[in-house]
Amino acid sequence: MTPSSPDAATAPVDADAAIAAVEPLPPSRRVSGLIEDVRAGFAKRPRELSPKYFYDARGAELFERICALPEYYLTRSEAGLLDAHADALIDRVRPDHIVELGAGSARKTETLLAACERAGLDTAFWPLDVCASVLVEARERLQARFPGLRVRALAGDHTAGLDHLPPRTGRTLFVFLGSSLGNFEGESARTLLGDIAACMGGEDRLLLGVDPVKDRETLEAAYNDSEGVTAAFNANVLNVLNRELDGDIDVDAFRHRAVFNPAANRIEAYLDVVRRHTARLGALGETYTFVEGESLFTEISRKFTPTGLDGDLNPAGLAREVDFFADRNRYALHLVRRA
Ligand code: AVJ
Image 1 (cartoon, rainbow, N blue to C red):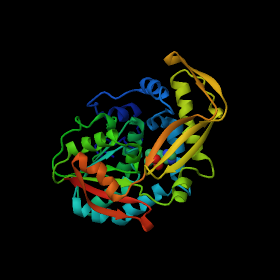
Image 2: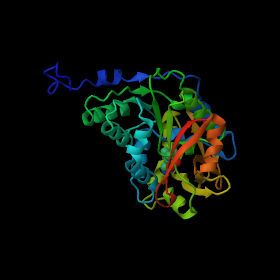
Image 3: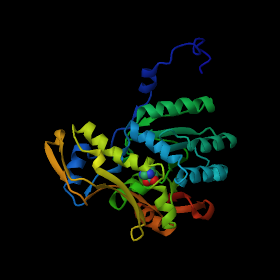
Image 4: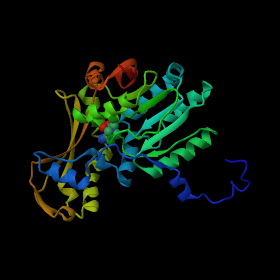
């Protein structure tokens, strides 16, 4: 609230002004789009789709519900770890800036900002997300809780490079939570981590939240919940294709399946075809036949061991500095520095 504007409490919220105050983060390099990705993914066997297309408005809402499911321990375990260790983490890093990749609602990060406030630090918060409206909401909530907090909302795709991240002084804590790294493997993981490393100075740190490898039952239950929310989340990607690509894919002809692949340490999610049918994607000018027994590969959610994670971090010029594990290795936070 600005004391200089006496009408602030009664003035209508200017939604356009709020959106405008979100700065675009221009991409450093071109990333492929939906049409290209579907064309290439549907040419493969099994056919595949990128998990980045899950998150339309309905997909984001379903994901929020997943986070509250009894079987999906990841979100709660991570929040518990942050609560337990926020003060120690912040005392160690003493960040002048917190830059969060894929911040979304930034609810988990509130814990870190509260720790900064307790430590007497004047830390600025820079959330980065592809969705500008979610950033506006996050900023309003955060500024209500932390009066005076400087929030610089950046709208952009963190997979398109970070060359245009505004320059910072002092120490920056990069934050990448929610086991989001689990969607990236091989080249894409190295690129993402390399992009973060390229923005980091010797005093900067990356706080990474990942899901450790654990027993198959716990892992598979987290991706096959009894209410079917994850199944709806997975199938919703077909609604996205139908809407965005003028398609007529029969969503009911697919069934959700998620299995742990122990050789690759990852959950693999599929949409299995249970009824043969032909669908047209108007925007591609293509017709696709789906046959019973074939599967559409929609997501990988990697699970990590500390040394497995080193295999991602070290080639990117990064190294683990401190590890925090939740009860019985349910979840992990890693504080990472430049190697
Ligand atoms: C947001 C990618 C971390 O892989 O656990 C949840 C997405 N998919 N249930 C995950 C997801 C199915 C989630 N990530």
